[in-house]
Image (tube, rainbow, N blue to C red; front, side, top):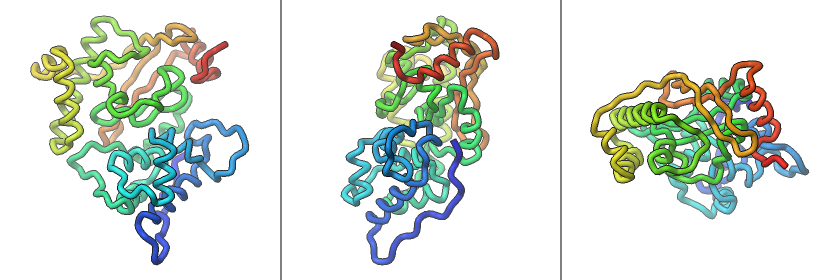
Length: 294
């Protein structure tokens, strides 16, 4: 997957409304992205120059109908959350992202709010590492991007919405997942995640979504509240994780959390030693993808 070049935003046509300009910009940005560059299959006859509306909807976790209404100018007030999802899915540069918010009549998130923008340099690095299962999370551990190997390994998150994409929320709510932890791994994980969240609240005190997340987590039960009040701080360490896959069984993989320089983004990478049984299973997983074996 190659990052788009730093191009100027599409120019507005004289005499048009901002809403129509928004629709044209979205359509133009969609047309320039080849499906294979974002991990989508290319099969079948394609009339669209780049991404279909259905594919953009899948990448941005929005409905096809809403994408259609945005492009046709029938949806006039997209929320900042929707704009952030579109900017990620369309791989907009910093200037293009600013232009998107301007066209939508929304203020671009300032320094007091958590950013989910993936810088071009990090984007190129992720593209070059596309053979390993990778995911990208913001400072509050919201899942903002993943590649096909990650979806094949841990399950396709495309249908998840809102808090369902937050790793800390999923853990303390006991939502299903494929990672299995020993009691010590669970304790270390919770200490690290709660510490990360506490640091995020210090860095982004004006972020209302973050404050709401912490409030609701405190109400999930005594476990989170006790850790939060204790002031405990954990440290991300490389380690092995057992992942139970419904088709190929249990894989034990190395898991590393990388903090992107100049941002609060977390890149989670799963790897296996070359020639190991786990590496062979990862290779099989790459073949079958998210489809069930028959």
